[in-house]
Each structure stands twice: as structure tokens, then as C-alpha cells.
Image (cartoon, rainbow, N blue to C red; front, side, top):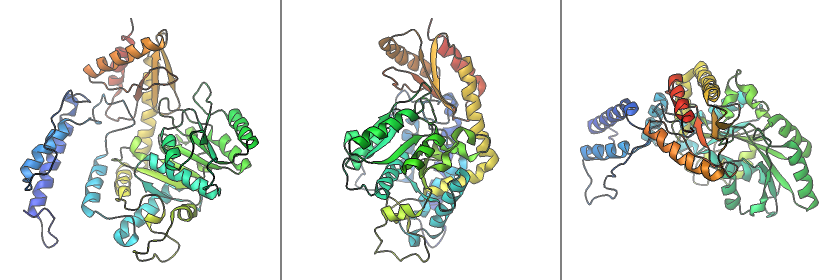
Length: 456
């Protein structure tokens, strides 16, 4: 059997392989609710290639082993992380993307798909209010989007050779910014953490005093990072106020909207992230709530020329593009990229604007509901205006909260509910994310009963 698809006629071996693999995947989905979100144990197939290639039947049986050992995001009890089940159309988009195997490095390697990505980014920019000069690029995850934003901000500020340059972000900013420090060759103190208030929001007054302090030390700031949806409690920084401050001080504003940025797509929920359109750059991850198959992250910028001026080195091995556009490989850190925007595009087409809005509204309704039925005489709840919340026992010490979090998480898993166990403020919490459309209100009622009964 030829392992490559025939370019001359219908490849029946490929057709059979895809049909059986798809059938197995559908069976895996169908049995999910009868299983646990996490497998209790699993068996790995042979990892290394044999001397001769194996048959399709062997491949399919080995795939089943991996599938049976996988986390099940479609399970109604899968509420631990920002990982919802994938849209059916997005699964198809991922398959077609793999089959086409186009490369968004250069226009000639992905004619229609490069154009699709540019136009999709423009649509997001328009809906989120970034203005007429805006544009963007897809990236493999929010960490890369955030890194590119900081590299771009430092370049535009003319501080790429200044090892003392700093940027500000809240105490609750994402860990990707710590990684960005190391990659960019910056010192640990280059990330200036700004305290948050009781709601987990960056304090403007502290930001102002922190900028004054670093100026007195002869240091320069190249960016302020505002978070639209923190990881543990879903807090939204005061975006409009921070934007006003940045405009006054002429400092780049990057909004990490990987978690909550998509709420700006609906008029009903956009007030939650008011000020999003004032950003100079914005990370949005549709994979975290809208069911787009991983990975799906966008870096959007108010002025699309800043991407090319920062990252373009020229592609001497590719035909130049006519007009004002640049090859995809000149708009970010990544060169070779798969057409991840295909599964985003087809997923959004399947949902429609009404479907997008329904997901956003339902996620908040579920968070409100479970928050209302967790016993606040027993638990301290921390949350924000979006779809996640965390809770910890009120009268427990930190060490008792640690023991409780382990015991209760295991007990919930035994009842087919999976929550995560973050540490926040030197104390362990359990976190529930209301981004799974398969989770119904009756499921949440059962979950809350288990939580409330975890403390006598």
C-alpha cells in the first residue's frame, strides 16, 4: 500500500482509513458520558517505528489505545480547564487542513488560505473595535501571541537593545509573560507586577505610581499588559481606564484576551470587555470557549503595519506579493504554519452569530447558577464577570485547604466531575469552568451538592 494519497484517482485505501478512523472517533464521543473525564489507567501502543510499516488495521487499533487513554473534554463533568469540546465542523476543518497541508509561510504555498486568514483577522478586528488600519495573524497558542505582542511593542518603542526596559502587568497575569522575559533576554525585574484589588483587577493607582518609580530610576516602559479574563478567577482589568493612561503616557497597550476576549463578539456581552478596541495589540483564543479545535489563537493589532515592520526579514526564496500585503511568514515569529484559521472559519460559519452569542450567554448563566448554589457559609468564592470561578473553604488553614482540595478533587472524579486545583494567594482552590455546552443545569446542581457536602 502506498502511504501517500494518489493524485490521479480515488484512493480507496485512504478513503477506507479515514472512514474507519472517523467511525472510531464517533464511537469514542458516543461512549464518553459513560466513562470518566480522565482515564483511570491506559496502555500505550508501540512508540517506535518498526523496520517495516504496519497495516491500516494495526494503526487503527493502536489509535484506539491512545483514544482510550485521553482526556474527554466532551464529558458533561469536564469542567477543570478552558478546554471545551470541539465543534463538529472544526473537527472537519482540522482534517481538511491536514490533508491540504498548505503552508501559511508564503502566499504561493497557501493561496486561498492566506487570504482567508487575513480576512478573518479583519472581521475579528472590526467586531472588537480595533479600527480601519487593523489586522492580525494566527498563532499556535496564546503564549506565542503574547510573546509576539511584547516583541512588537519593544520594537515600536525603540527599546529592543535596552536590557533595562520594563513592562507592567497585574499580579494575576498569565505565566506566558514570564516565559516571554526569558525568550526576549530580559531580566526578571523587567516584568513589573502591579497589585490587584479585591476583585482581582489591576489597580490603576498602583500602575501610575509604579511608572513614576521606574522613571525615577532611569528605566523606560515599552508596554502595559491588561488581562481580559485571568486564569483562576476570570477577572477583567479596567481596560478603558488603562487605555486612557497608556494613551496619555504614549505607552503600548497589549490586552491578553485569550480567556475573555471573545465576549466582545456579541453586543450583549461586549460591555464586559469594554475598552477592548483601544488596545494596540490583542490576543484572542477562540479555542478556549467557542469550541474551535486546538490550536486557535489570534494576535490582532490596531495597525497591521507594525507586524511587518517588526517581523519582516524578506523571503528571498518565495515570490513577492503584489500590493501592500506581506507573506504570512513575515507577520510573526513563526515561519511554517498550518492553516489553523480554516478550522476557526468553518467553526464560526457553523455557529453563526446567534450560535456564538448563545455560547457566550449560556456560559455566564451557568457560572451565575453554580455560584448561587455553592454554600458561602462554607466556601469563599472568587470570580469575575465571565465563565469561571474558584472556591476554597472559609474556615480552613492553608494546609487544611490543601488536604481538602486533593481529597475533594478525587471524590469529584469518582463521581465523574473533573475540576482543577489552582493555587492562588498561597492557598489552594478548586476551579470550575462553565465552558462545556454538554454540562446541563442538573449536572451543576449535582456538582454543587457534592461540593457543599465536602465539608461537614
